[in-house]
Length: 89
Image (cartoon, rainbow, N blue to C red):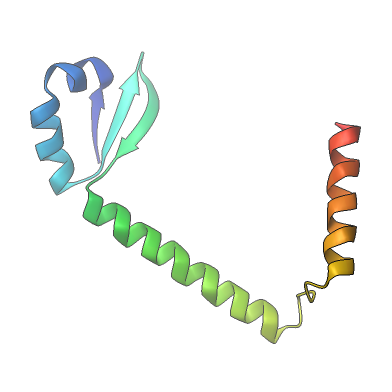
C-alpha cells in the first residue's frame, strides 16, 4: 500500500485520485497514519465481504442457540441495562 502525506494529497489531488483507483493509499499527517483511501469499487467489495461475514456469524449463532428472541420484555430489559451503564459512566 502506498503512503502519501496529506499535504501532497491536497496539492496533487487529481493524481492522488488516479493512484487510489489502482490501490488503497495510506494518508499521513505529521508522520502519523490518519486515513486509508480506496476506490469506490474496493469499498463496495469490502462492505459486501463484511456483510457476508456478519450473516455467516449470525447463522452460526442461531445454529449454536446463541440468540435471544426480541420480545417486548427483552427490549425493556435491554433498555434498562443500557440506561444503567450510561448512569454508571
